[in-house]
Image (cartoon, rainbow over all chains, first blue to last red; front, side):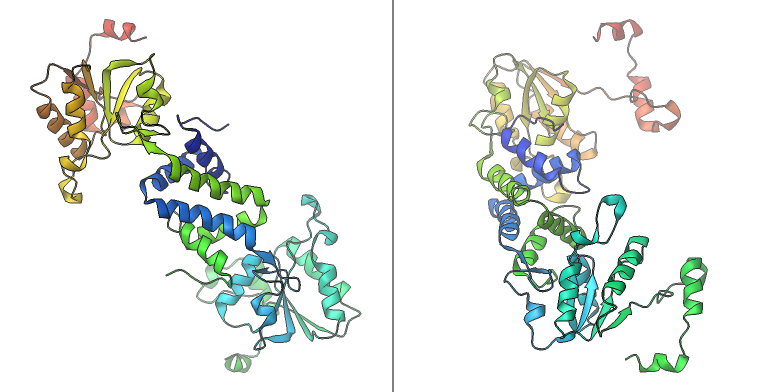
Length: 208
Length: 208
């Protein structure tokens, strides 16, 4: 239950702020009182930025990433490689991969991973549209970039089987020890995998 | 500097969210993406609640607490004791004291405490208006409820001197060991004070 603070307007703002993930009643009140102390344009600017964003952001009809137009800037860019499609779980992952500046292809945002426990089946995800995209013939390689969890692996395998009939290369992000990490603190599963999947040293020179 | 996320609207919302205290760039992005996943009325409701609050909340012209009208509900309540005025630092402290349900008087929100290091002098605070309120004759007791810090004590002493000429009782919140705390973990200053200011045991029965 939300508390009452002698002002309907304050109560309302606090109740809305407290719905945000990781923000409880006390933090919500602190944020609301902070906003009250700021100039009017700071608080009203925040309010309007949130409303405008939610009202006007759509999803790209091709890759399902967020977009302000029907086709997102990545999908419509002539400088990006349309033959390589990186499959990710969420919009956040697109931003994370873009931040590496190592990938110049397209994306396909699934909107989640297969998780029977959470009631998420393949039909809830953008998997059919991925298969369609691949079948259209313009895609040469699909890179599976889901999180390395059980659900992610299940989804990887499901997609792999769905695409088996298509003439497309299917690759997956390399798994191994993190750069800068110490072996001592790497978990056994990862370290074991990175031994099994070791690569010729000479190959590492050609990465860049 | 704020990052760019391929959408001006998202960038803008993230930049505004990241200005909130305790919310950095990453949390702001997480919150913005969370709001994008919600129904439109959740995000737009939050945006409008913030804008509405900041646009329409004013400050009570008598006690300087937040209010939706010229005089706040506490100051205009006939059931509250206008002869007792509790002096607090901020709006938050009014809410904190109200939550105890032990106080039935009025408030006076200073808007801060005297702090030369932060450039806050008595003229930046609502001290003149407090003196005026007391001089008007309706106040019988002023309760100093500032935070027990050096700045709070300085401000207490300043107010005490300003009100010296007035026929008004000036009291201060009791300082001592916290209820439920163990003596072993009470700081020495507080424990020392609570020994010096010990009260007759029989008096404690009459509190409630």
